[in-house]
Amino acid sequence: YQRLYSKPIKRKRALTREDLNVVSSSLAHTDSHDDLLFLSLLLTGFHALLRLGELVWPDQRDLRSYRKLSRRTSVMCTDVSFEFSLQSHKTDRQFAGDTVLVHKTVSGANPLSAFRAYLTARDSRHPCRSELWLRFNGDVPTRGWFTRRLRKFFPADVSGHSMRAGGATALALEGVPHASIQ
Image (tube, rainbow, N blue to C red; front, side):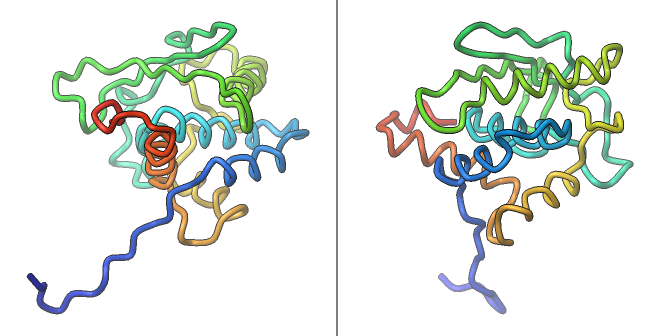
């Protein structure tokens, strides 16, 4: 079937583990709070198969809601993983939220070490704030902020959705059953 006046669908490219390694090695020796935040968001989104909108605020102020922000108090870290609560989101039918669990990787860009580095910087800079994801200036990161940082590493064929698509593709390539990838 053919659509009237249609243009070919332009999908954004899925990120690869190699892409993550490039960003991670580029930011390996940074002590910039916002660089640590960006890397942690990128690796968390990829490994937890999260949508960008589940990690950052929309650019439109009237669409922002504190109810949807993850809280610092929900974080739990172990030697091999970290977890936090994802408040209500667009696929949450019971409005109960979900727990996001991310394990460290054996090789390459490690989401656990990136998260710990960010968390140390965040707790030092903003010890009394309840939001988990905070920029150096205290603002919750927005989609535009994340996308501008993404553009420093990738062309326009990569977007916030590329994290989720890339994480799902990586799991499929590793042989994880399709029913387990969500």
